Image (cartoon, rainbow, N blue to C red; front, side, top):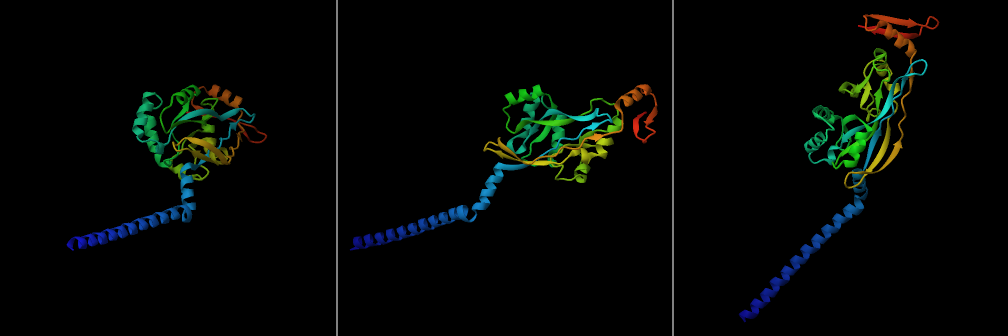
Length: 282
């Protein structure tokens, strides 16, 4: 009798355990179904947008800066195609190791690293941040063939050149890296991708005319972070060319006459008051 009672008790306990296990499995299945329903139906648009946001990025297109010319159309300041080395922090596990590799390849030095670290606050993690400018075509092509470093790329860009050297430099001025004050002063949207701005002379006085209007492009990256597609959303508008009353030939002749002597020389057209030459030496 005791054996029959124990058997019945064991069966009762077994059935209760089956019921508990079944309830638990059903609860887990319902929870999983709810989670899938939440992901696939309720929040489908949100997660789709998030996923696309990881693949698609909107980046600024820097406009080509306008030229500065003399009264006869001779170029005083223009742009030259060159190449720059960039680093994308979000693609790099250890940026210091990347610095070391680039130094071994003699592509950068300590000053480049220092400037890069100072400029980090201007960019986001997914931006291609310049670390070295004005690379020659041969250096750029050699790096592209041998590059095995993730997050390090070569980009073409235009940099400012002055064909006549220091001639008329006090009139033309120069461009240089944007300072904190520059970033606060100029339109943040229009200058989002801009690195250099006018600092003195005509370059600064007519900065916004010379600068042009920034554009936008959408890039798509694969799972490895490589750009697989690029589409221009809004093209950039190049800056305006600026024509001066200065006559370059007369300017060079005046500079030659002074020949580093202390003094100043101005040549003015008496008919309209335009300044044809303006030279000053300390």
